[in-house]
Image (cartoon, rainbow, N blue to C red):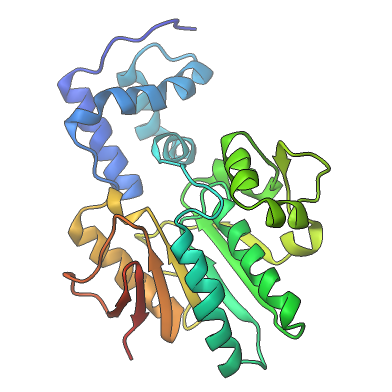
Length: 275
C-alpha cells in the first residue's frame, strides 16, 4: 500500500477533471489539483493503487467504481438550520399559507442535495413544530443525493461532532425536544419522525423521476458548483417535479434571476414555479 503519492501530471489531472464533470456535472478548475488528489487518496489506498493514472484506468474499465468515485469527489458540507432566514420563512410564512390552502393532503418536500441528512432533519423538525399546533397536518420528505455513501449515513440518522454542537447551542429547546438520544453530544430523530423521510440516489443532471409531486424543493448550496448552463439544465429538470406555484429554495450564494428558467423571484433564495 503506497504511503505517499506523486502529484498528478497535467494530462492525468485534465483526465480526472473531465471524469468529474462527466459523472457529476461539476466543473473543477486545474487549480483544484490538491483538493481532488486529497479526495481520491483514501479510495486509492483502499484499492492499493500506487498512482492516479492507474486509478483512472480502473475507473474507465470498471463501471462498479463509478459510485465510489462520485462519493469521493463530491462535497458534503451541511448543517442543522443552515441559513436561519430560510427556516423562519418555512415555519412562519410557507407552512401556514400552505396549510390554509391544502388541509386535506400531506405536504410533499424534496431535499434535492441532501448530503448526510441534516437538512432533511431540519425540515422534519420545522414540520413537527407546525404539527404541534395543527394536529391534522401531515408531511413526507424525499431526500436525494448523487453520493450513495453519504445517503447511507443519512439513513442511519445519528449525528455527532461540530454540527451537533452548533445545533445544541443555537436551538437548545428543539435539540432537547427532538433528540431521541439521552446525550448532548449526539443527535438522532425519533423513529416516528425518521419514518417520514425517505432516501434515494439521484443525479440532478438527469431527468427527475417525479412529476407534479412536490410542494417545495430545497436545492441549496449545490448550484454554486456548476457552470451557468448546467445550472439552467438542473433547474429545468427540477421544475416539473414541483406543483404549479410550488416553491424552490436555493443557497445564499446562489441566484436564478439572470437565468432562463421557469421560476419567478419571490425573495432572496426563494422562487416560485411559473404557471
